[in-house]
Every structure is written in C-alpha cells, then in structure tokens.
Length: 150
Image 1: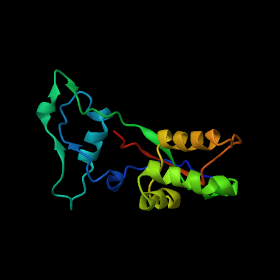
Image 2: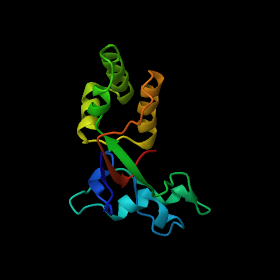
Image 3: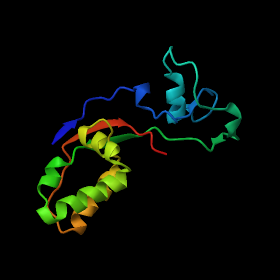
C-alpha cells in the first residue's frame, strides 16, 4: 500500500466542474469554507463558472457553507479482487462497477485518476466482508486531498 502523506497543496483543478465558488470575503466563515477557498484560488485563465452570491449569507450563516476538510482518498482494487475466489470475482467486481456508476468510472478509481471517499471505501470493504472475506483489506494506494463531496 502506498500512502502519500506529504503536505497537500490546494489545486483548483481538483474541484468538480459543477463546483460553486464563493467570493464573499466578508462572510464570517470564509476562512473555513471550501467554496471560498476555491473562489480565492481561481486561476487567471478561468473567466466563467458557478458562483454563490453574497446574499446567500444571512445573519452570519450560509446554507452553502462547506467546512474545509482533508480526506484520505483511495484507489486501486486489483489486489483485493485477485484474492477473491473465482466464483465471487465477477459478481463482486460487477457490484463495485454498479456502485461507482459505470465501467469508465470504475477504471478511473482503479487507476487513481479519481479517488474513493472514505464512505466509498467503507462500502467496498463491507461488500468484501458480506461475501466472507474478513481479512485485512487495503486499497493499492492512498492520497490526501481536499474533500469536495457535498
């Protein structure tokens, strides 16, 4: 298992395309908010995108507030799948693919192009336990990233 635990730098490109940026620096929670962090780190060549308007902040509260959080994202499941009995391999792989949405998405998570959230990791590990694979399971790699999940 590889664990890249070095200090993570913020990368605007990690934000989903549908992410909303905030530019309201007077918000009392601006320094703790992922939306404001992305807003203040918009690259010079980005000139259009989704935004949260200042009037979303009422009485010091914003319904779009998203606490800045780091997560330990995981990728790669070939090692775990190789431990499966032949009779379980196709079924378990299919269930993971369905859970992640498609074959394309499955391969992005397997190659590390996308990272599994802690909740997704737990779902996959629970699936292995459900089929009787109770030994210690680990994904092939981990990286710490900013959490953009909603």
